[in-house]
Image (cartoon, rainbow over the protein chains, first blue to last red):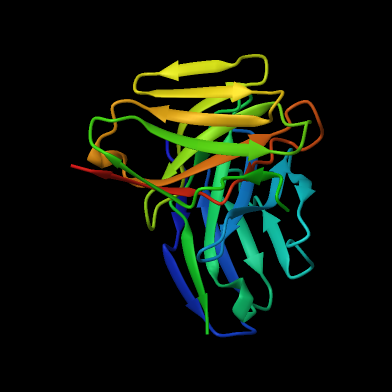
Length: 112
Length: 115
């Protein structure tokens, strides 16, 4: 069964450093998303990406965040200057036109 | 943002019995609802969905019921098995709007099925 692949599974970074979280969505999917889950809280929408541009973003997705689909297969989330409160599980997801949503296993980001 | 609420943080059920997980929503624009199961250190796994034009959808041991007037949906698992023990998330989407398929999640319910 097709999968959404995320790397790394765990990333530890110092406050103020830049991090890039990587995702390989399912190849024939057209819509891509990043969500995050802070420990003990609900899964929150960050951003959606369609047709090579951001289609919607949440209030959380401020200027410190950016997304890119650099080569037609990878989908990345960059946090420019990490803060302690960015520590969370970050989930990439992709979906097809029929609303078949698939989530990756997540990257646990720990900011120290 | 409390547009999707799961008011029961946990549920404990005996193996073989029915598990009923509940979800309420406030946004009347939501027209598509999904249930996900999540194990620790894994991503959400899709279980079952329902469109707002239906009031019931069934897939094996899983049935989702939608009551649009009450803005309430529930997931029934019959019979419950120990392997069903996980966190269950309700999610909703406004497919007709301009949300591009954004999902709004509830807080999750921890289901424990005892042998």
